[in-house]
Length: 253
Image 1 (cartoon, rainbow, N blue to C red):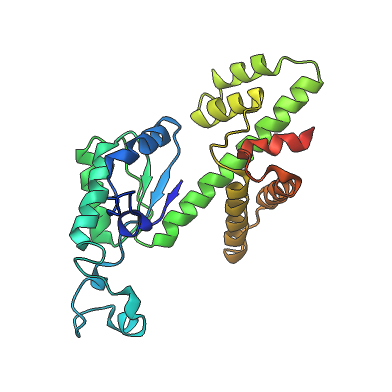
Image 2 (cartoon, one colour):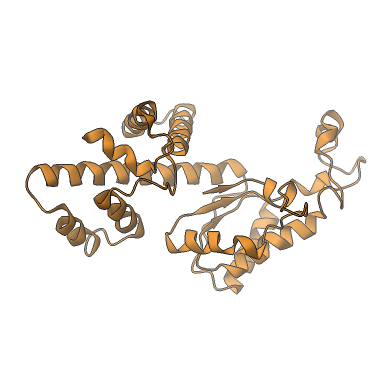
């Protein structure tokens, strides 16, 4: 799940007030993401120099001079330290949720210490380039998409061969595949609970397109990734865009 910097920046509530990154009204979302083991990639604020004076000491001077709209202040939308404190409280308040954050090394070290102190089970460092966090998200979503397709095909084969698909999936999810991805999505596939969507096919296709694009840029062969892009594209073309992405199974009927 990707959270853009608009949370904390431009998102406002019904009263016109800025919604803070750690707004308690959003707690059920982070809690559910933790329960379902869905990683949350979150982008908070802009680089700190965007808040600093426009002088010769500002490493982003040229960027700000050519793009003045990127300049921030303590009232547009809030002090940088305030935004980062909100993000850090969010992490601390939800130790059972996997958050993916990116930024300068000094900030990452601070977050790492914060998460350890908050009781986080583990911290994985992917470097200080924001793009690497996005690649981690794309690789993870590729595995989820592939798992959904594999389960859908396995369930379809089991049913058409006279095997009780529910018993078969129970065997798998209570042994070799005892993981939330297989347990939760397997249950949706068995019961065909494609609406309301937890994550739409339209968004799944967007991610599949980004995965294939990243693979081409990195010159990495991804035949399964390209196949999944095709499968999701066909599903959307058949009117399933707003169904849950597990509805790709309907294309097997």
